[in-house]
Amino acid sequence: MKAKHRKILAAASLLACTLTTGISQAAGVLTIGCREESTTFDPIKSAQNRDSWVFTNVYDVLVRVDKAGTKLLPGLAESWNISDDGLTYTFKLRPAKFSDGSPISAQDAVFSLLRIRDDKTSLWTDTYAILDKAEAPDLQTLVLTLKSPSVPFLAQLASPNASILSKEAMVKMGDEAYAQRPVSSGAFVVKEWLHGDRVILEKNPHFWQADTVSLDGVEWISIPDDNTRMLKVQAGELDSALFVPFSRVDALKKDPNLVVHLDPSTREDHLLINHEHSLLSKPQVREALDLAINKKSLVDAVTFGHGEVAYSYIPKGAMYHYADNLQRPYDPEKAKKLLEQAGAKGMQLNYVVNAGNEADEQIAVLVQNQLAAVGVTANLQKVDPSQSWQMLVDGDYDLSVMYWTADILDPDQKTTFVLGHDTNMNYMTRYHNPKVKALVADARVEMDASKRKQMYLDLQKLAKQDVNWIDLYYSPYINISRKNIENFQQSPMGRFSLEETVKN
Image (cartoon, rainbow, N blue to C red; front, side):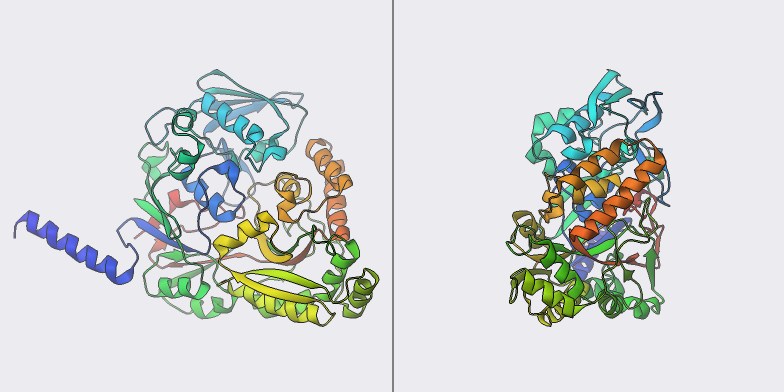
């Protein structure tokens, strides 16, 4: 048989396999089923976990967080030093290239960091406002000067939103084009983005650690329905999938072809409250909702023993978590009295639910029934996960369950984003407390460790007192992969180190 004919037959066989499964099973290409879909490849314009996790495949940062989520490691910056007054950070960048072969220079880092601080479309301006100046005295030296000392600043540079972009490419292409097909500084490059379906990544040969990357590529595939994702992994149509339903964990563990991963996390699920709703703007109404929800019964029913009741926005195990924070008891009678006093008797609320998310749908029904018992009608609106985020941004909701995972070691990032941030409306809750906002800013620059800890304890107390949202539960990351996949792990910061993953 001639080589040409063999190639044609091989290609035909591969095409038939692809058409049969609907999923590419090319050797060396890892397929990951995920609930959400990507929204952008512009790191400053997103706060969604799906985006951040893919950003870490496509971009590199100055400093990284280790897989255990406990310490900072060199990234594009191979070394750094901090001045005695805590104001000046000097980084030495390693020799590295973007995916187009151009060198990554300190000027690119200056451009990226000033952009996240100054761009009007950035969701992270408050976090990086502490940065006074960013300068590049030479191609490999970056000097950052702060307005005042800041304990979390170095950790903030490990955030995927502070990824290093190509200044030359973005200026040439424009923001919108770059956000669709970016020039990469990380292990993989965006080959194709099929909106509503998948992001196709291929290995970046110019990545500074390319020799250690085993995979030829990665496909992040959007499959909103939890059970569909699990079935595709079981059938071998996917290599892996995220967000294993709590109800499926024990059964999937018995499948000899699969590995169920329960990785330590910084995840917290919570019920967002839109404070701009005329009645929800009243603290006693929000308190009534908190009292009306039986968190223990909800967590027991939904997580099958894999979650525990949350009572602070800073999760257990994280820096400055307040173990003695207020936990309101389940008290429907008190809830009724507070609602009546606030003139909210018979209140109706629009509850946005992520369709296909088993846990969210179960929570919605339980919360709906518990609120009905105190005279509150929660009208459930099931929407595709790709739509719900924009509804939250637009304020087109009253209640909705969402979750947060920390991207950095320090609590400043989440605290700023949910309590002291105007740009994103405090995680779309529209919560506003000037005292809390000032304390968030002060905690960021407090250098005395004991004083800073107390500030975060006070912030947790104030958030709970104000019912900025309703804490629901903490849980591990629960993902699944087939037996032939090695080193598939999610760090506590949510990152997948796919440059270390092997597909046998």
